[in-house]
Picture 1 (tube, rainbow, N blue to C red):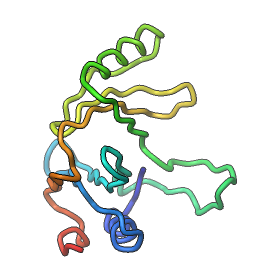
Picture 2: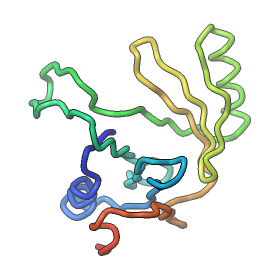
Picture 3: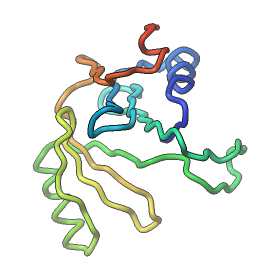
Picture 4: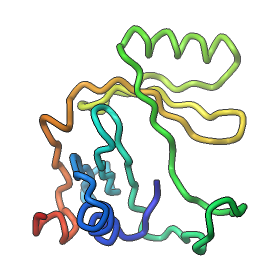
Length: 149
């Protein structure tokens, strides 16, 4: 998902909805200049947000009504093992789909592609259980994270 204000996003999903914040990454002074925060949906599943400060978010809409504009960055789907990830990469490429090289993010290993509808997808193997061992690496976390729950 995409937000232009991670602090408001944390306050809503963590403090209002009650979702556990289990990971933060980002370092505006290094090669990872954006925030990427993870809220738990249960073991192995997260709702993840990228903070793009200059993004123009679409106006509010009711469910079931068509819309345009950027609503999310990509969908991430967990697979069980490195072998499954390698097999999927081969299958995508065998079918002529432009699949990325495998990317090791440290806590997750990922493969990226785009579906026929233009939806950006990530297939991943979690190398770290963020429920059991949260990851807080954002070098300058938003105020709601710095203040705690």
